[in-house]
Length: 290
View 1 (cartoon, rainbow, N blue to C red):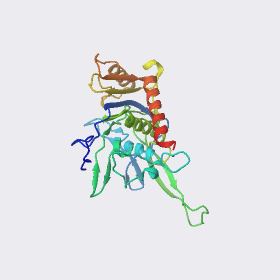
View 2 (cartoon, rainbow, N blue to C red):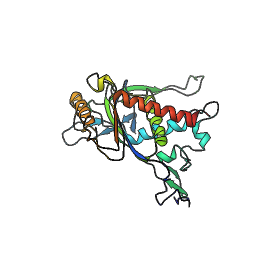
View 3 (tube, rainbow, N blue to C red):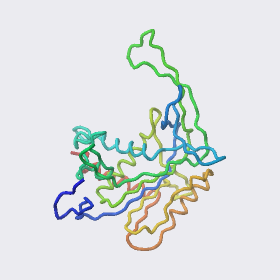
View 4 (cartoon, helix red, strand yellow):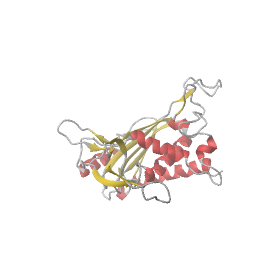
């Protein structure tokens, strides 16, 4: 995309008159119930997504970062504007018809594409999603009923099988923001929190931020960094770990390792959650209340 020819825009295409930071969100999510996040359909079976861990090692269930990103974007597009329409309608921005505008709070962070015309590169990337525990998907029988309100005699349900991730699986996930303003981060915070109840394909849906009283004073296993200099150890979990206690300890230990210096701020647990909620409120005030 060719940047506008103004003094506030340089060759990067990003406005330079606002203070920018890197932001990271690290969290451990728990599937509070069985969860279906589809991968592919074989003969009469809907399969969940799994990751191969190597020779002679069992596969692990997977919460795809790409699909999680899609849920977050839809949370923004379908966000209700007070007394009016949805945010996507207000901005004339949707899927696949994104507006790809730097002024759009969605596209400016998540990126946008108008095929053959304009591309806006996103500055938010998603990672993680490999389950900690080695629990195989559970396969259950389901029936696909006709969609008509009045069922005719010959409209019999179509039986099929679907795999589900077992309840209680823990998924380490990470969101990384590159050179965004505090105002733009409010979009990320709102989308991250709002999407938690909507993650999954079909029903049931939803995950929660995992809590453990041994870490972060009983608060959620959540870390939010705002920085210029990367002075904190990244609280990521090795996919090879399958023992929950060992994985949680690795996360908490890394979260506590910060080199003293300027231009780095790390929030953990309840403080991190409060910060995301405050940023979400700013997003609502700016984009959804009028």
